[in-house]
Length: 408
Image (cartoon, rainbow, N blue to C red; front, side, top):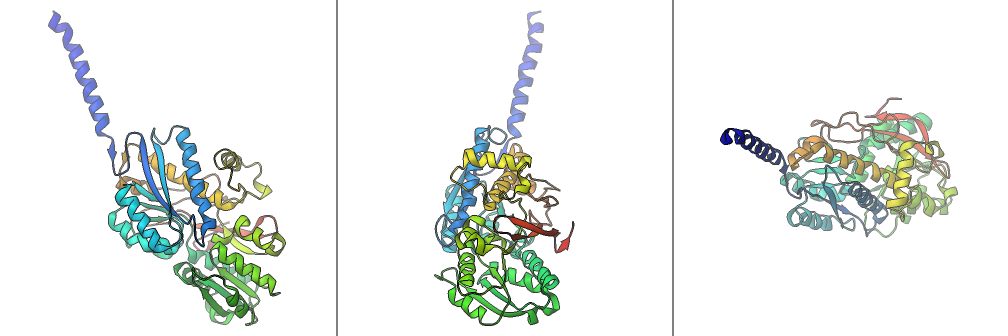
């Protein structure tokens, strides 16, 4: 009798132990993961010529602090190790090796810069480390075969350039174009896209080109030379420091061309304000994020959440700087990927989830722009919109363009 009464209890305990063992077995971790923590790595130019862009990293740190305060991702805190590379590729290599080999991070998140990512992406892919949502639009990073572990956040540079070229052909068909570009893959890809957008008339319309090195102290001489060609349109493919110099020098010498800058320099805080808002009025750029300085989005729920986040978690940051809004949005996407991984936090599954994002709408993406990835499509954002700075805000021109085609 006694034995018979105890048997069900024995079976119950054994069943519970088996269930617990099964649940534990379902947790699969890669480097940098425990039951309580997920370690990510990042390089940012906290010093050097592109330091204005380091606010991206500061926003990331603040956003993950918010997530951790709310309980983390599936109960795990995110630890982002964000290191300064001074926008110097050799330093990037050194810091990324530290992140992967010493810090044993699960993945790299949003390493910044075309030159920096060019220096590390072969090493990172060789190590099979997720290289996610990088801040570069270079075409070589959107290559599923050549860089299967790399996934850019921003639209392709060639698409940006193409949008500018098509706009010029439509609005100023007889334009005489001068181009200032950074002498690396960033500038060359943008220039390639511009030529594609201009089409058969590219050689006729581009009357002058001048490049600069990231180590140059100024680009004043290049701007003076470009003005002397008689160009009436100036296209600047540069990081904020050099874009600001170019626009300021253009005004100082009395040159008044149609001015276009790439997305990296479409910053009210770091480019337009330093040169003077009145001087900056009329500059064209492209964006994919809602502009926090635009009253159009004052009552937008997503914008309200973003502004509240900035006030509480990053009070030293400028909430009206679209770079911060962009960083907030890409950090949201990183959290979503980790959430989808559940308890299978391996590098392979992180990459699998990052490449299976379908028609995902994030709150601050412009209407009509979605996140779409797949094993054959390595690029989170594929749409953008042409905008003009009116002295206070970035005003949309036309509709959303995706892969070179207007979609609305």
